[in-house]
Image (tube, rainbow, N blue to C red):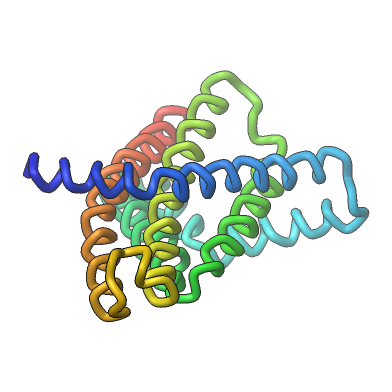
Length: 205
């Protein structure tokens, strides 16, 4: 297990420039969304925010999470949150689509901006601030890793020489192997993030 973790950290260090860039992009796009709501610019932003929040609570995973929490099913809520963030938040929307290497960057900008718009006004008490910032940090970090993994796969198809080979098949195989190791870190971060978020909500409500 220690050898696998060691290899995972090696991949992390190998992709650290991409990971850091994606993470910074999350922060910048989040702040832009947050500030635009604060400034009420453009004029449609507040109405858009209200509709977005309404859709999230009516059709998104938050509806299921809220229902489980109300029934006091903490463990199941943590598992559901972790599974959704891993499968949908990380794998499907940032890694898998990385075959086209620039799409994870677009997803990052849109996701960060959307979260900034939605979370405006959420920082009301010290406890909520700590819970929210902790959750955002862990999820943004995990999604930065998964997006970097997707970009890594995409680049292997168009720049095999980056992987010290002329064969796209070999470079793709090498990138996929790296991403598998990277996902160990993603799983750990998202698992901790789900525990942090759901236990925090349960303690504050």
